Length: 141
Image (cartoon, rainbow, N blue to C red; front, side, top):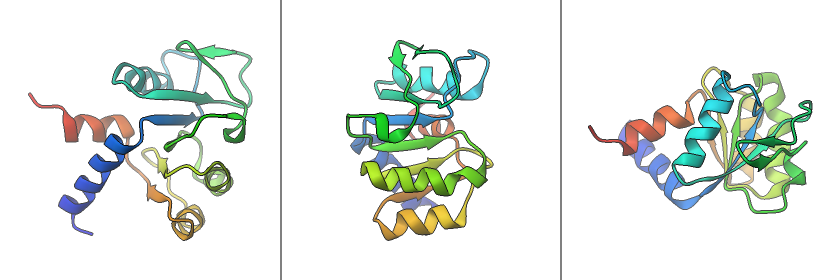
């Protein structure tokens, strides 16, 4: 797929899906997932932090979920800040909740996850930063 087509598709995804689950959301304000969660909230997205190990109950004013399937609202985009090895299991949960996009952050890719979601008509993006792509596609100087 040429980059112009890919850019147009990514723009369409941002505009179509206004709810984003951040898998691996950190309560630590210095962590990338925390910074990006705050950015997405400030950009107008409804964000659901997902972190099975934190004791924090709230991140940026949002309740923390232990797993994707605990979220009762529809999730459009599942954004992942976890190692590539965990992406296949996250892909299964993405399918289970009926999300529309599985987005793996910079440095994260998993072929099995890609196949799983593609077979279920879920758009797959990997090795791209959701914030950087938004800035690149929507912000003008």
